[in-house]
Length: 101
Image (cartoon, rainbow, N blue to C red; front, side):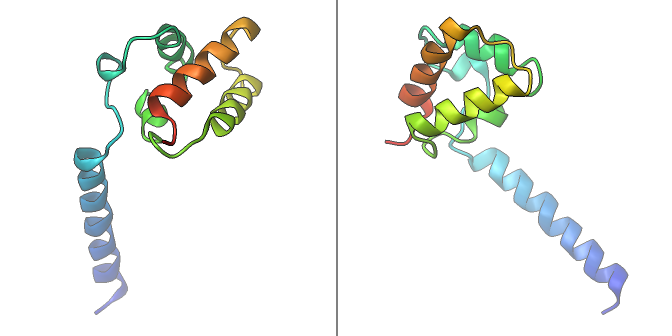
């Protein structure tokens, strides 16, 4: 087996794995699937300025409240437009609806 065949095989494996993850992922796929709550509009407005909501929802069940706080603070440092008064609202929403149980 030559290098080109190995590279082609790995490419197929990666594409297949990504497709399977997209279909089977427990993460919420769109804003319509997000539960209503005080933080939903903040999440949709602030987080989607730079990336899709799936970049947030793919972590459903993974982060604790403290982890979500760290993520929000980091994103604010990177330029996310979240008012200081909205940080706790957003963190509470993420922890309640996407947080580790």
